[in-house]
Amino acid sequence: MTGSRACAGPGRAAELAANLAALETRVRAACSAAGRAREEITVVAVTKTFPVADVVGLAALGVTDVAENRAAEAEAKAGAARELGVGHLRWHFVGQVQTNKAAVVAAFADVVHSVDRVRLVDALDRGADRAGRRLVCLVQVDLSGADGRGGAAPSEVEAVAAAVDGARHLSLGGVMAVAPHDGSVDPASAGRAFARLAEVADRVRGAHPGATIVSAGMSGDLEQAVAAGATHLRVGSALLGSRPALR
Ligand SMILES: *Cc1c(COP(=O)(O)O)cnc(C)c1O
Image (tube, rainbow, N blue to C red; front, side, top):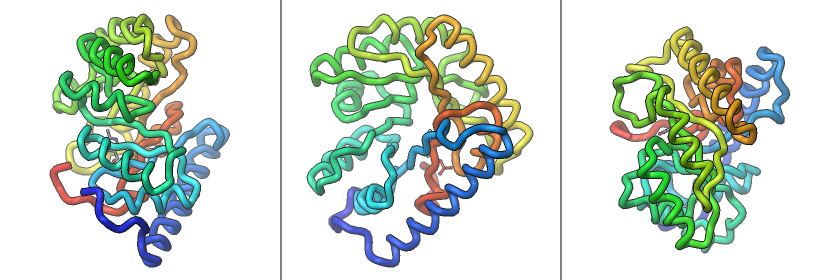
């Protein structure tokens, strides 16, 4: 899964550069349409299913933030990237975290976007303690009520946020959500979902002023996310190309 080649070939490097340039154009256009500064937005490259060579290739193009969604794959890739001399990346974890994998995630992740229950908060805090690390945690908000991608119901968010805030080795960064799409992206429904997330984010910030991160928006709906106040975009396919299905 992490691949054996240390470097992307020249064709792949050119493809990643072109994708990154096109993405940058989209993000700048979305910022200017929303009256926001480009500096307010962090692009996180979602490298799941792609080899570590692509992580190295993106880092060479100036990408600083990468994300994964499976603990074992992420741990291996972060380790391989470090061995290849790419030790300065910020690693984000965006997948559902099983409680018994929390220690694995705590050992490599810098930012965990998918914290959705108090039991997981406790497990991540113990894992961070054992690893001698401090993790930034985002509370994942379920905007669908139904799609099984994880997330706390909006009414449960404050309890999870308070647990993170009270944990010794965790910092509350803010909130995250995935807009509910079945199949194709509907811009209007993405906009409504991100508006609901913005309300939740405001409430969390009211109680925890440092919780300024709003992680929202993917390849298909990043314009709506920027319009609704996202600070972090999680972009996979627009940067790396399409993944095999079922991810
Ligand atoms: C895979 C994934 C992304 C990236 O999705 P793209 O549509 O490929 O940009 C973003 N967020 C989460 C939680 C993901 O699992």
